[in-house]
Amino acid sequence: MFYREAGDFKTSYQDDSQTFPIKFDRYRYYAVLIAAFAVVPFFINDYWVNAVFLPFLIYAIAAIGLNILVGYCGQVSLGTGGFMAVGAYACYKLMTGFPEVSIFFHVILAGGITSAVCVLFGLPSLRIKGFYLAVATLAAQFFLVWLFNRVSWFYNYSASGQITAPETQVFGTAVTGPETAPWAAYLFCLVFTVACAILARNLTRGMAGRKWMAIRDMDIAAEIIGVNPLKAKLSAFAISGFFVGISGALFFAVYLGAVEVGEAFGINKSFLVLFMVIIGGLGSIFGSFAGAAFLVLLPVLLKNVLVGGLGWPTDLAAHLEFMIVGGLIIIFLIAEPHGLAQLWRVAKEKLRLWPFPH
Image (cartoon, rainbow, N blue to C red; front, side, top):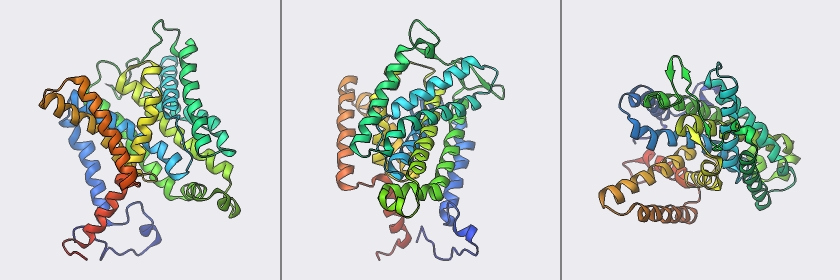
């Protein structure tokens, strides 16, 4: 009985309603946090940060934001790439306009600006849903990319049309720019990822999360029992936009350093984050992390095996990677629609009884 609840008694409502009520879950959570903050920074290098850790942490934030909107509230969105672009360009304008302000506040304010934009494009959800709402958010994706391409004010009238993050420091350590140490960029993104995960976990387990799930399951019944659809839907768009905006700001400022909106935040980015949510599991914070890890680590693994190990051409390996990812998405939709999160739930049920079969 490796994973068990027997003997884990609670004597107060506060203990019973905590985020991780099972002692094993709490210890596992603390162990992961200690390893992430106190062990990993001493052993990582440029390759591990740029190929694995930074993409995973940033995409996990974006997947959490989209999961709140799609998985918890049931509002389909295909505009994640465009909303990430809003966060990136908002962060760029804040960094160049107010260089004396800490980048922590730039990233948070970029999330707030993205939240407002997301609410604006979420207004159609009050009248339409399903496929029609997906088309409306897809239009937002194309409009935002067009806007950032056409209006030169957003990229400070640069001849190339690109935006480049200036060098900024936190407590005397560079976190953006070419002089950034790998551990500094990793810890900067890790702080935002942990904070966003804790915030999302508490929101989805509270009153707001219950309203979102009521709207998702049956909006008419939810309205009858007193849930305000306008507040519930727009709050889901706002919170989702806040997380996606933060991920876009980090993706631009810390990970890439310089971006062009069509290349970095095109429709492919929207589908990539959506696939992370589908594979990880709708309506699960853990599923957002699992989906992000899966779609970040799989290309790295395939590249090392096919190109580095077997000596295949790079273009052939890239095409095979698309085929494998697409096939896995189809398999997940057929065999396990609830994604990796459901597989983890089943594994925990088995571990509760292990080594006994029943």
